Amino acid sequence: MVLQINSGDTAWLLTSAALVLLMTPGLAFFYGGMVRSKGVLNMMMMSFISIGTVGVSWAVVGYSEAFGNSVHGVIGNPFQFAFLDSLVSGDPSVGTVPALAFAAFQGCFAIIAVALLSGAIAERVSFRAWIWLSVLWLVLVYAPLAHWVFASDGLTAASGGWIVNRLHAVDLAGGTAIEVACGAAGLALAIVLGPRVGFGSTPMRPHNMTLVMLGAGLLWFGWFGFNSGSALASGTWAALIWVNTLLSPCAAMLAWLVLEKRRDGHPTSLGAASGIVAGLVAITPSGGSVSPLGALLIGALAGAVCAWAVSWKYVLGFDDSLDLVGVHLVGGVIGTLGVGLLADPRTASKVAGLFYGGGVHQLWRQLVAVLAVGAFSFGMTWLIATALSRTVGLRVPMQAEVSGVDLAEHSEVGYDLTPVQHSTYRRVRHTLLLDPAQLPASSPQETRT
Image (cartoon, rainbow, N blue to C red):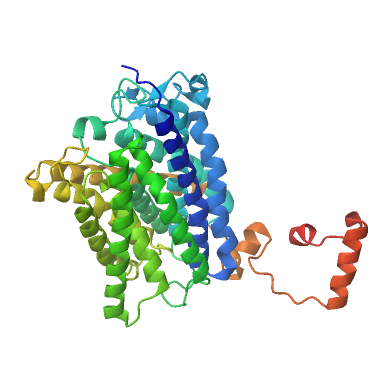
């Protein structure tokens, strides 16, 4: 039965899509502040270029792979919605919203998922290789996983993915398809690429914590659309998800800071920002199936465990530059398994977790989903990264890495602090006012100035 399109639900979904898109520039600030100053522009560019590469790829083939008629529950028909052409008329709907609005919303999910990967390989990856990686990972990893987890039977096509329809695991907005998948992929990329020059011996502190805090705030703001928009309707369920998306990061931030204070002696702004993200990650799969109390418990657990997990890379020797494994993989696992423990049957999911009398019935399903998604993402990403390393080249030369990927890859610097004499400034300004074409530019930045 085709439902009538609801203008309120449509407005909420389009607003949510815009909020999710805002998360990618927010991630650029968050990641950009966490790297050293010589790599800030490259770090931000990897997020911004993902909007272009993934946006185009999603329209051409990605949406069809994710939400086309299923091939044995593994992947959608890649030609069914090619170029989104069949959605233009506005007649197709997904529930009470136009299918085109749903495609846009899910496309913004795909963009942020790919952009997240850059955090594991910061300051040492070739920009050309990153462009290739963003497209290949979307087509070969993310779109199939989105089909497994999000494509319910009858949602956009007759048949969908095996995790949501056969296994019946619960994942509201991508605790497995995005968080676990990105964390596992980040681990594979970090292993294939190798550590940064000086990893473990040279301090690699965040260069601008104000950018990090700004990015964390934008991510939290956008995450309300990320989670609540997944209800596909502006009603009671969306309200519950919104509240849970508020509470979980609150508890996670406090838990992270308490552990940090006891362990290191000081609560830091980086800890606060990281705790917020850990709580957001953990509530992503569980936000629609737990009560506010459950959201607080999941957030507190994620904040404490992730604060501990970010140190694993030093023990195990892999350079996950910005803690994609410690925050997103670990937080995604906690949130996904949290459904099996704390799911409240009063919610719209109608699932009962272990602590609500459901036994391990749902818990084992959640565990299988985590293992399947993690293994697939790690294995496929390893193959993609290895292939790119042997063809276009995955890593920048050592000299470029030491001097800074901003200059090597983009011929720019994030902070131009070169002193300019007052007389020189007056001459340049006068020449520009008379005839900008007369000014010989020695660099792209000078031309724009």
